[in-house]
Length: 297
Image 1 (cartoon, rainbow, N blue to C red):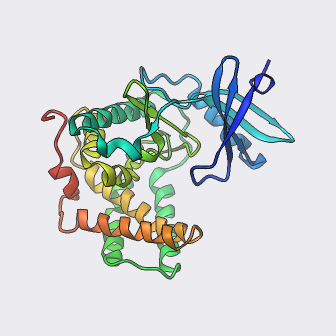
Image 2: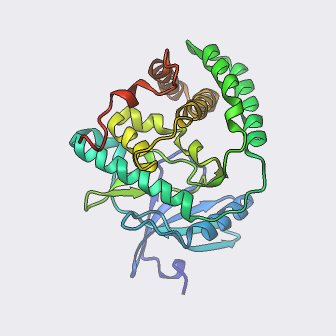
Image 3: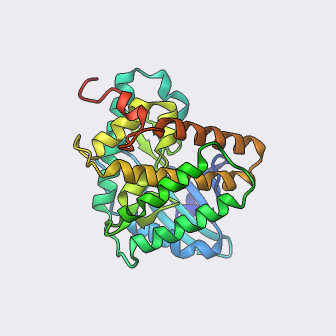
């Protein structure tokens, strides 16, 4: 008997930017998250089910696929429901030591995601990502909205393209940042929403860490340090700059369709990124240098 045949109640969820329809469903065996996607996303949804079905992250709960259905109602995937409070709204209220502890959990979990999900790589990363850079720069320059320091940012992006050569590729969560984390009832990290999974450079997965930094620089630093087992490679930070800068650029035209308020949020985020990295010849952002390490906490 499928989950749908056992549903007792359904609560719609309207949060997030996805076009998918989401709801929490309750059955006699517990709660699940239901995500309904457009028919053309069938392959993506089925592949996510295949990739994540055998993933183990120890004591860190995540949205694990349980059932996938496809018919005239659309593509529907049921995942485990990760109970918890939105981490972005409460992290800053926790002690710095707890913020760092949760950052460590996030870093370790991400390393395991990259190591334990096996995928087939069928494209040259440098070629693929350089084409993406070209598109993002063109879209930004034609969107009609600019921010101070944008041309210097673009020049730095151009100077770092060579670092993309021979980069490895792994499975990616695709949207790994504080907006997809919860604080579980036992005060640990829970991970949501693998819907934007992709295959690419594992270090690109840090391109949205700005949102973690905005809430807790200590959490963001701990995430990086724990991922690398407290031995961050020197070439990580130039690539981090590249991936974050491209994401910053693309966020401006993306936000236009969401309204003026969201554009302002992205412009503020861009200004903060420029401030964090300006004058840093080693590309290590100021917030990372100034934050407490988990060894000191």
